[in-house]
Amino acid sequence: MKQAIQTYFRYFTIHFKSCMQYKISFLLTFLGQFLVCFSVFLGVYFMFLRFSAVKGFTYSDCLLCYAIILMGFSLAECFFRGFDLFQQIIANGEFDRILVRPRSLIFQVLGSKIEFTRLGRVLQAVIMLVYALMTCRISWTPYRVFVLIFMLIGGIVVYSSLFLLRASICFFTLDGLEVFNILTDGSKEFGRYPASIYGKRVLTICTCLIPFALFQYYPLLYLLGYRKEAGYGLLPLLACLFFLPCYLFWKIGVRYYKSTGS
Amino acid sequence: MKYLSFFRIRFVNGLQYRIAALSGAATQFVWGLLLILLYHAFYEADPASFPMRLSSLVSYLWLQQSFFALYQVWSWENELFELIQTGNVAYELCRPYRLYDAWLVRIIATRMSNAALRCVPILLLAPLLPEGYRLSPPENGLQMACFLLSLWLALLVVAAFQMLIHSLTFYLLNPQGLKIISQSVASFLCGEVIPLPFFPESAQKLLSWLPFASMGNAPFRIYGGDIAGAALAETLFLQIFWIAALMLIGRFLMHMGLKKTLIQGG
Image 1 (cartoon, chains in turn orange, brown):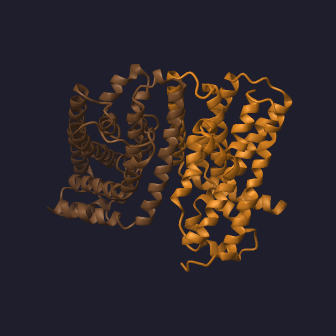
Image 2: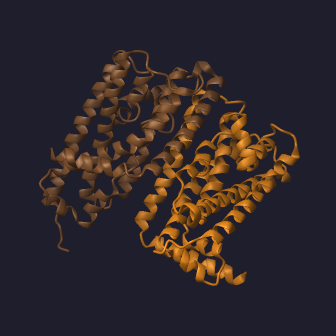
Image 3: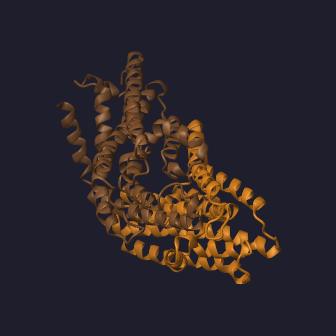
């Protein structure tokens, strides 16, 4: 375990040094990531200049909602980028090299890419989270603080699992599936509003199939005091179980894997 | 004639990736549905604050998703940037065509071939959906004709805007910053995040004069009747004005840039 952490730290410093070789390029991409998220934020702001509330949710409710999902997404994307670009690892034969090394596969893919430019989004998420927490009328209790932390952890785990699932599909298709973007980029875009405003059917999908609502929507209801059931605050931990089927699928994928031969 | 064959090569090249296109169309379709559900919720919250008719907005969203590949500012011809950066643009200059025209045709052809495959499934499916979610036909023939005209003009505006950025690359060499900033600003101000009518009233007039309103905004709003009458004539005129202006500036900048370009051997 200690060795694994040391190795990961080495990967981390190597990636950091390599992206610091092109400082201007790093800063500009960082700025670009920030600008894209900022324009989405402005979109929400403009909508609420016109409408005071939507399905009972106010402006600051939606900001908190967006901050949670953006934080989970961008942190997962930052560190799980290797899985996001997995079709390249399959296509250029890199995965064959990974297979012969005496370390865990997931660990090696994890270390293959760390995208520091995505921290532009994390920065945006942090600013929004702080701003939303300051304007939201949440009656804070120690439990509610834990619920917020659970929500952030749940978000990171669910998105990381999704990236793992997306990578596992590459074993069968050899190429990334654009449709999968609906689950990753789509949930980030549409997650700026609480899932219930898209209707019951979308909420059911986001609860039972891909547990976005478990770490975002339901605990948010509890946090903001719309629902009294304290159990809602523990749902993000349930959402973390989503990792298991994704991991199983990854295992099946690895067993199925045939080299592309390049 | 030579530009026509140039166009054909690029167009046919883009048509090769059919499965990718189908997958893209499916993504865009679900995306469109979710957007419509979102705006329905806002409409229910306060119909009086809604700045355009719901049916016009639904048509707007479907068209936006169908012609996504045609207008999104953030897909670039990266090979062209590489040509400038590596100096391989020297080979291009030896060839018997005008660089600006050839590259402009190339941008238009790539966009059209990407859009041709992606728009068909959405345009076929969207009119079949239930009331309130469907793409409804325009009210009259004139609207349809103006929409089709505006569709082409908007494509030319986007292509001319991108050519302006390509021309500026001759001066900057590293286009990354310019690309990122111009694409973020353009896609926000052409209504990709929220349609322009949802922007604050005070900004509306100014926004409609900018070149971005002449991109993926004008044709979609003409189709649903959101832009009609005198505003329609003004919009079409502005589109033509921006095509002319962007092309003139882009051409001039490229001409001056090429004059001082120094290709080092290699």
